[in-house]
Image (cartoon, rainbow, N blue to C red; front, side, top):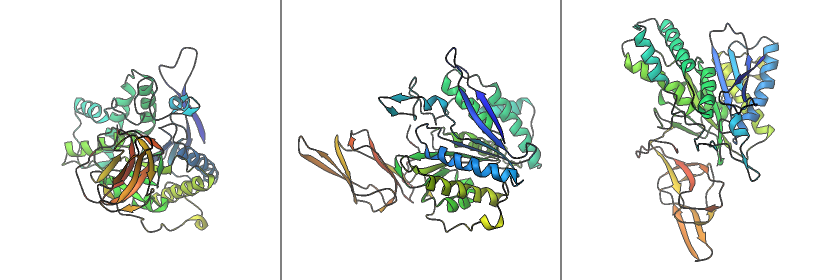
Length: 377
C-alpha cells in the first residue's frame, strides 16, 4: 500500500488542504478500481466502510491477493469536513458558494476529450483496446489541463484526475433516513447487478442523464457519448461508475460497515480484481428489487409549515393515494395528510421534523416512467 496526498489549489495562504488516497495492488495492472467516500462530507457511513476496506485490502495485498490497482479515498472532501455551524456539521454544500459538492458542472470531459481527439486526427476502428487507450489519454490530458477557478473546482479536478482512467468507479454516499440504494446508467446495470445483490440494495435507479452532473455520471457518460459519436467504431463503456447510497446518515456502525465492505470485496472478487480465500467467498443473494427508471421517481414535498408525523418509513412499498404523513400546525390547528402520488418504494425520508413547503419529505421510486428525469439540485 502506498499513501499519497494531493494538494488542492486555492488554499488559504499559510495553509495546505490535501486529498489523501491509498493505492493498493500492482501499479502495472491493466485494471484500475477507484472508490471514494463522503463527497458530501457529512455523509459518513461510506468513510467507515472505507476504513474496513482499508484493513481488508492491506491483508489481501500482503497475501498477494490484490490483482488490480485499487485507489481508496476514505474522506474525499476535506473542504466540507471543516464546515461546522452552531455545533452542526454541514457538508453537502460549499459554505462560500452554496454549490452542491456532487455537482460537477464545470467538468466537461466529453467536450474536452472530443476536441482533443479531433485535433489529433483520431479515427477509431475495430481495435477496442487501442480506442480505450487513446480515449483515456485524451481524458487524462483534458482534466490535467483544467484550470479550476474555485476551491470546489480544485477538489473536483483532483478527484476526477484520480478516477478518470479507472475501469470501475464507486462513489459512496448516504441519505437522511434510507434503505441501501444505488444509481447508475441503464447500460451498466448488468455489470452492477451482482454488486447490488451482494450489498442487498433495495432500490436501483437507472438514468442515462440525471441532469445533475454527479460525480459518477461525469465519468461514465463521456464514454456513452463518444460511443454514439462514432457508432461504427469499437468503443466500449470503459468506465463503469455508480453512486452507492449506504442507507441513512445515522446508520453508522461497525456491523453495517463490515457487512458493506465485505459485499464490495465479494463483488471485486467476482470481477477478478481481488482473490478472496475460498472459505470467504459467498454466493450473491437474490436481488431485492428490480431496477426502476429515474423518470419514475417522485419527490414528495410538505404542503405547509408544521410538524411532520410519518405513517411510512424507508423501505415501505406504498400505493397511489396511500397516506404518507400528516403535517400539523398546533397554532391554527390545521392538519393536512400527504397522500402518495404514485405506487412505489419509499427509499428515503427526511430527517426534519418541522418542515416548510419547500422541504422534501420523502423520495419514492416507481416502476413506471412518469417523466421525472432529474435529481435535486
